[in-house]
Length: 369
Ligand SMILES: *Cc1c(COP(=O)(O)O)cnc(C)c1O
Image (cartoon, rainbow, N blue to C red; front, side, top):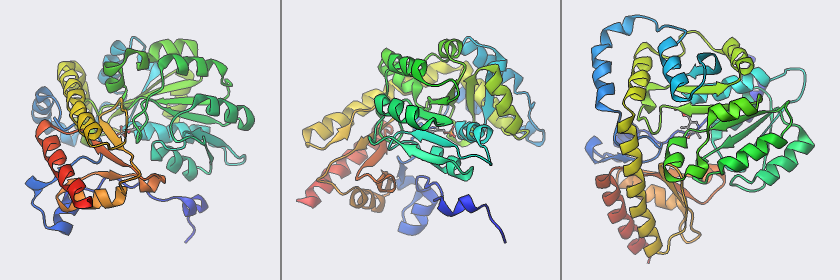
């Protein structure tokens, strides 16, 4: 058989280990497993969302309204823009794929540019379409390096992840705007705002305003998701906001019915009940403080975060050993060795989950002595 030759060079995305696998492999009961590996919202979705899913379960036999009229209108209102500036994806992940797909040229080399350590899917999708992947030397986002490389290499797409997964750092919105002003109009700049709700809460200077950016720059797209702050990771809904020209192109590669009828219902309802989301975000940062205090007290290095996760980065700790040790206790963390880093990402859980993690962390530190 003949496969796409570009696949040779691609490693499949390593998702956080699923609960079911840990149950099987370690013989741990489901209720004793805590998954803090995929940045899911530990408080779940708003009760109204669950209610609406129950009420609409009988529509499972029907395809959704493929125009996503209701959801787009609600998003347009939220972001003070037009439905024609919005595309819906099966997670914002799918829109990342669309962006690369519409820029890919089979008969000419095209390049993408990203931070040294950032969301793994940019590289995976880019390689799938034969792109050359350029990275800044620094792991975290350094816009001077981005600018220098893009002047020299003229990438088709630049990915900025603000805040950045898996490190947690976040660019200032002013910096991003200045950067957009200096980038060639031929380059598409993808602003991945998967954790923007968290960043905006913690720090107004990090908050991106898609509508404002859209008016100033025709060559950018802002990506948002319902998977993190809205607690709908399992429903797979994301959105992109960009000029009508870009949105039109993206629609050409979008498969029909790319969101399920129930996902649509969940996302629409989640937008209506944003108080719940705000409460989750507030709790996230008060819980994060508990980790920060603990790590400071025990002199463990971590990266300050504008997201719902914290990344431990400390040369005294081998991240693989740490994650494996926790896994045996039923706690799933994310080792970042596959990103070339001796670091471990931990999603901030509920208070009960975090207390358990920190109690075990003390045990781990004792075991190292
Ligand atoms: C989680 C995440 C996404 C998208 O997730 P979806 O579930 O596909 O919407 C995109 N970018 C980053 C950086 C993420 O962490």
